[in-house]
Image (cartoon, rainbow over the protein chains, first blue to last red):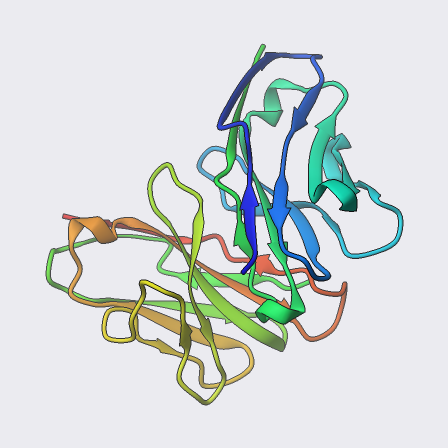
Length: 114
Length: 116
């Protein structure tokens, strides 16, 4: 069975600071990896995704993530955050073997102080 | 991509009643899923909605409590039966489009249910 672990439950940082959110998954086969964001009071939105190819994936709003297969990791990064990046971030994994069902990590709440 | 609409977007429900949530996708999709997001928690998959057949439920979820229909390739419903306050959650519909950008799963805006 596939599973996802996000190590940071809460992150507080100031504007212009750099952000890195950890995500590790557990599954031995081929996976698709996603980061979703949920802004306060809003619905879930896709930030970026990895299916294959270049392991460094760029998404919307200046976010990027790096797939490191040997570490089963897909960490999310942003070099300089803004107050508007305050949100909850979810890492998720899906595989064809598991019926393309998304399994989510526990989420990381990010608060950016102005 | 796919645009997914859910109704109702919010509701306050009486204990013991049932509510059906509708999910409409603007294009044909191969797979549809229903998730639950309890307050302050992550998303948990309830079931995969199968077209023309019974849904496939995840561990801990049963058809009697969460009956699901999927009559065609663009529509599904989830019913939350005999509700209790513990069922207060956001219920999200998601779908995997037939055409487009690979295996990206899209989500509706969610249906926020409060059971009193």
